[in-house]
Image 1 (cartoon, rainbow, N blue to C red):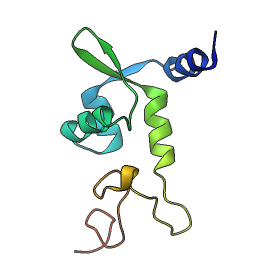
Image 2: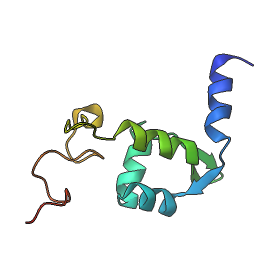
Image 3: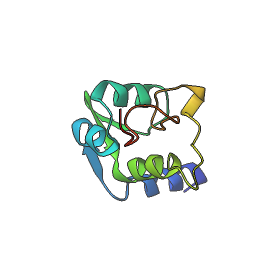
Length: 96
């Protein structure tokens, strides 16, 4: 087994979830989730016409987007509106 196969098998060890569950877990719309998959930000598998997301891939993405010590994580691929929120944007728990 080569390194890529080993890495792929470790990602799927926790099983798969469907798109609505993955979107809910990340707090994004299904459309946004499909965009993240299409952009390569989120690993997925296709079973026929259905897409499934490895549980571990969801956890790794969420971990990668965490904000620590008051620092804002950069938006993937330099885009705004991805999983990380910029200071002062709605949805950060500030009164609006």
